[in-house]
Structures are given as C-alpha cells and as structure tokens.
Image (cartoon, rainbow, N blue to C red; front, top):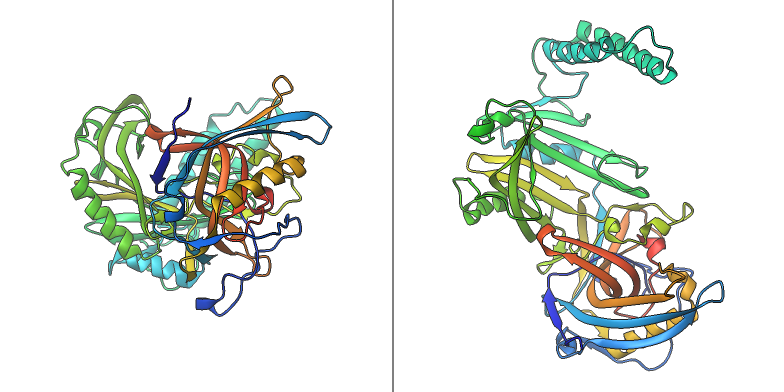
Length: 471
C-alpha cells in the first residue's frame, strides 16, 4: 500500500481562468476570469484562508468510471499525494508581459553596463572589418557548393547566398571603421563594457511560436547577455580550443567543479546581478554546474555554476510546477485556440571565479497588483468538483490512454499558482491558486517535470480551468 505523503515544496504550474469577485484592490481594476465553457458548481462550500487547513490531508485514493466521446467506458484511478507550496498563504497576482520597447532596452542596457560605454551591435552598425569578416564566411559557404549541380535545393541555397553576399558588399561600403555609440535604443543588438571586458546584449521576440527556444503555439521573449570573449572565462584546458561553449549541466554528477569560488560565493555574484537587473525574478529555484566543452572535443569540464531565478511571490515560483513544454497533452491544442505567452519566466545566470559569463532572461513579466491571503475551498469540495467534472464532461480534458487498458491514472494533487489570461486586456494575466490533479513524473537530477493528464480547478471558487484555452 502506498503510504500517505504530504510534500511541502516550492511549487507552481500553469493553467487558467475564473470568476470576477476576487481581484480589485491595488490596480483599481477588476479582472474577469470567467470563460464561456466553465462548469458551474452550486451548493454550500467551506472557504478558509491559509494553507494550514490542508496540513493533515491524507493521500487521495479513489476510483470511478466515465464514458468517453465514443461511448467507451474508461476507468479513472486516483492514488494522489497532496503537495503544498512552502507558504502560509496564497495570493492572486496580476501581471502583464513586459513591452520590449526602446525605454525598456535602455533600462536593461544601462543596468547591465553600469556606466560603461554602449555601442550598436546590429549588422547595419558594425565596423567595416567585422562586416567584411561575416561576408567572407558566407563566401566560403557559397564556394563549397558544386556549381555544376542540378539539385534544385542546392541551387536555391546558392542563389540566397549570392543575395546575401551582395547585401554585405553594400554594407561594407557604408560601414565606419569603429563601433558607433548608442544614441537611441532602436535596434535589438548592443555591445558594452563591463568589468574590464566587452559583452553582447541581444533582444529576441517570437510572435508565432516557431522561433528558436520556443514551443509551437507560444509567443516568447528572450534577452541574452554574454561575454564577447569566451576564452577569457573558459577553463585553461580549453583555452587553445576553437568552438568553446558553456551550458548548464543537468543529470548525473560531473567530475569535481574546478571553480575557484564556492557555490555560496558564486551565488552572491548572481544575486547581485539579478537584483541590479531589476526585472522581478525574485524566487531562487536551483543551481547546476557550469559545463564547458569544445565542439571538437567531447570531454566536459565543470568550472562555475548556473543559478536559476523565477518570477513568483513569497518565495514560491510561478514556473517550477511546469510550463507548456512540460504538459504532455499540450500537443492536443487546436489551431483555433489562443496562442499564449510562454510561461517560463526565468533567468539563468552563468558565473565562475572570473565573473558573470552569461545570462539568459526568458519571458519577463511585471507584477501590477497583489491581493493577499486568498480564501480557499475545502479540499473535499475540490475533490468532489474534480470527480463530477471528469464523469460529466470526460472528453473536455483530452486525456491520453490506450484502448488496451481504458485507464486514466493520477498520482499527484498539487496546490500551485497557475496563470489565467485576462479576456478583456491582451497580454495581461493573473496567477491564481489552483489545484492540479495529474499524472506527474519528476526527474530531480535534471530539475525536470513531465505532466500527463491533468484536471485544473480554481482553488478559490471551484471553477474548472480549460487548459487548452489558457496554456
């Protein structure tokens, strides 16, 4: 028999929606969480503030049957541990996507370069020598193709390369000999001085969900800050290698970390960096070794640390319980359903004894209002709502199961923060307390979570959240 477990962990996730009564307060406006396909539940309910009411709640064990859209009977088995966030209360938090305009770029650049010189670093402002070097790289690729080929794909690529070469020729003619100091922050790439070295700062925006580092169906924003001279930071054993890269190392243990700083000392540098950046990534979640290797050398060296910080409140992350990528049913989202902002609001800071090597800022948000100490439904009411919803509208959840077993299982019931969109204000959201019943696999060494079939219930009013309308 599986033992009863109550796990207190920094938790959260994603999912969404709900009613209108709770959030006014700080911002002076009301957020309407209601959606068209909400299941209403009536009757007397018990509402209590604080999380102590759930402290002694046992594991939920239950089993029932439901009928799918084709008329087949499916068995639903619940053997779910109750997981609570490491907090005394939960809030409703209004947020909005950060607008990456010239004022925002100026703020970020000036905080990162801290009084040092800042230059344009986009292709139209680069010095003549650097543009010529990039042109030579394109020329060498073009020269590598067989000019006698009849392959249509190769011919198309060569034509595109020739167009690029011509464009670079024009840029070389107009280019200056030195970097150009910034006057207005109207481009996406910058170069600046920090602590005796040059760093690159880039802003990327993906609106169609198809860009690098995003998942289909999600919009995203990324800020990348990295040293221009990676050899300045890399381990001595790689100092004479080409193609040196660094990245977080997850999974099985590396050899000893050769960084001259302890993890605690390195974290102080990362904490200071995040605080000075001022983008609201307030919750430290975990660290990983900073791994180095060269493309031509498969060996990996640990030298430094990667520290991860999330958007959140009261030391509870909005990100750690899962983002769209971790929900295995996300591939059942229809094209007609709304495209959403990537929920991974996280910053990763790469540090070793030589300083900040790199930082990647994902999907920044701004907290605009907080309503504290939300009243939460009794757990028995939530479980009743979940069971009723699955029985009455089984097909709405788009569960995955096979015709061999006709079985849907759940192993966790977690209270977390889930993001719901504001239907009246584009790019505005609220993180609300939500109970998630799901089939979850956790990979602690990789700091990864994979979330299978899930049922999401607003912990304040008991309304059902349509994952596919929100995520």
